[in-house]
Length: 70
Image (cartoon, rainbow, N blue to C red; front, side, top):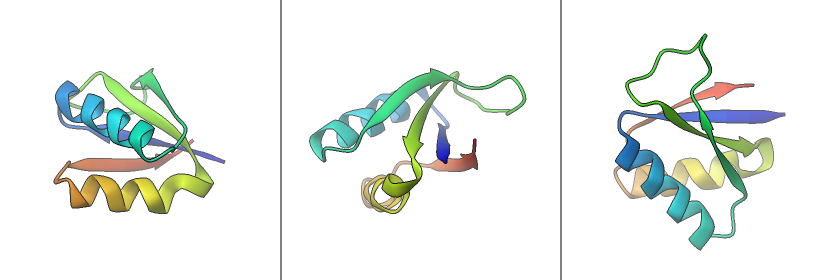
């Protein structure tokens, strides 16, 4: 299963992507699916096994986000 992480700004999405790379977390930048509303047009797609790690990292770095199951 994969999850989609949404962000309020493009800057936050890019910061989160960089944090994933620094922490060896696989992620893919995707456009926000049409059926999901967001203030930003970018999202990260991550594997279920990385959800806890990325959630901890974005919270620690003060990045506002929402998580959706894909």
